[in-house]
Image 1 (cartoon, rainbow, N blue to C red):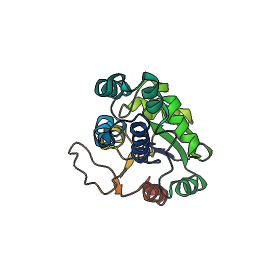
Image 2: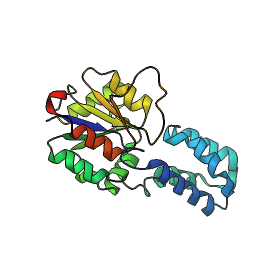
Image 3: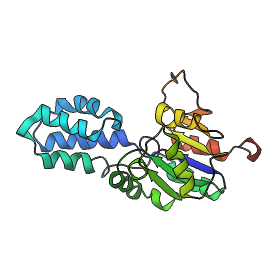
Image 4: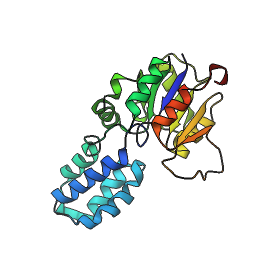
Amino acid sequence: MPLLMIDLDNTLVDRDAAFREAARAFLATGGLPVDDLAWLLSVDAGGYAPREDVARALVGRYGETVSGAAVREFLDRGAADRVVPAPGVREALGGAVGAGWTCVIVTNGRVAQQEAKIRRTGLDGIVHGWVVSEAVGCSKPAPEIFRAAAATLGATLRGAWMIGDSPHADIAGAAALDGVRSVWVSAGRPWTDGTCRPTHITDDTASAISYVVGRPVDAL
């Protein structure tokens, strides 16, 4: 069966919206300035800032106003407790599985947090498996994490596709692998990376999955 690899944060789930709500609750609960929401979102950098850096930034800004336990709770569980599947994703994934695709989530992050998101959204009951960077000791765009995803399911990368929202982690990662094609989930953004290009671009994840599944077998 052909292999379909899919990113998690801001691809299968709206991680940024979940983090925004978690950050708003963190500030409100701690009696911190609500106007700091934009600052906190910038520090988070869409989830690409190391957790330790975000924690240090919070402690540096608020000092003893917030406890270390509150910071850890926010960073460990805040967004994971609020994520929901992106529109149409569950149906599109179900269609891919029904069409014979082997679907695996390939995500950077910590195992406990990423698995909590996968289970909270019910994606664990649809996909065939997942690979988290912390567990395999390498992160996208390193080719090893994609190879680990294929090996986990006894699949091959030849003819595989990668769907994701990150030009660097997802699309450049796929471009470095022989035989792997990609779909970039743009969310309306223009493609500006001059080092590589995705095979296809869609505005949303459900459309990306449907595009891949709808390709004729001889085009894989």
